[in-house]
Length: 227
Ligand SMILES: NC(=O)c1ccc[n+]([C@@H]2O[C@H](COP(=O)([O-])OP(=O)(O)OC[C@H]3O[C@@H](n4cnc5c(N)ncnc54)[C@H](OP(=O)(O)O)[C@@H]3O)[C@@H](O)[C@H]2O)c1
Image (tube, rainbow, N blue to C red; front, side):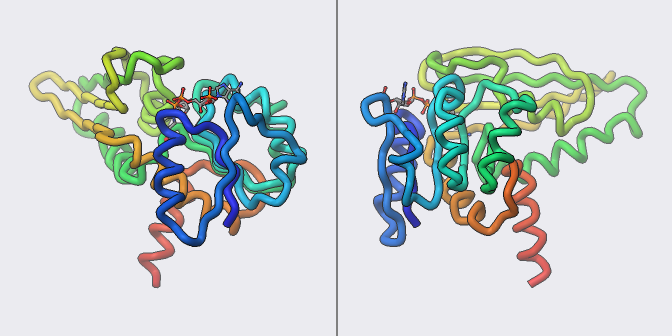
């Protein structure tokens, strides 16, 4: 598989490290000195983006015109109808995730259980706190927003920006007399690179259109169980 890697910064460089350990993968690096255009993307199987969201959006037109499958980890923007049209126009499959950690799929199931707290408690309050490095541009993180969506409840969202913290998310359920914490700590950016490369293998088998990584991963988990 030939991967067009957009961005070789803190996270993209981890993807590059893993790609160079695999004989079945080839890579072209795109950054501010070698920007991605339709013609330069030609011949690749998958575009893998770890550009920041604002820069990714600048290239979305060219990427769409290339008609190549996309795995995007770029964060900090919404999928507006105009952007979804670019995905549809590309006639290729795209996988997006704000958090490619494979462990996040277990978290999604745990949040689903916690979301049922109202059935047991008359008074339950949820809050989500996230911590990231000081260079992160968006806040609260896309992952914190995804947790809120999965929860399906209003929750208080807070964040901190500290040193080089890779990414910590904590959901607290507080009732009158107890507290439950669900905490995920990313220790190394490699976890995002691993999940994103797994998604590169998957995206080639998907129908055209935008796919959410957590749905793709959960489907793979349930298919594996049926084997
Ligand atoms: N989904 C996930 O699992 C996940 C996990 C971690 C991070 N992220 C997200 O991934 C994104 C990147 O994060 P990061 O911390 O790795 O960023 P980063 O270290 O700042 O790296 C950004 C990269 O973008 C390139 N770039 C900047 N301006 C450009 C331009 N005009 N044209 C082309 N390339 C350009 C930079 O290249 P130069 O060196 O040439 O400037 C650099 O390689 C963020 O949105 C972050 O939130 C997602």
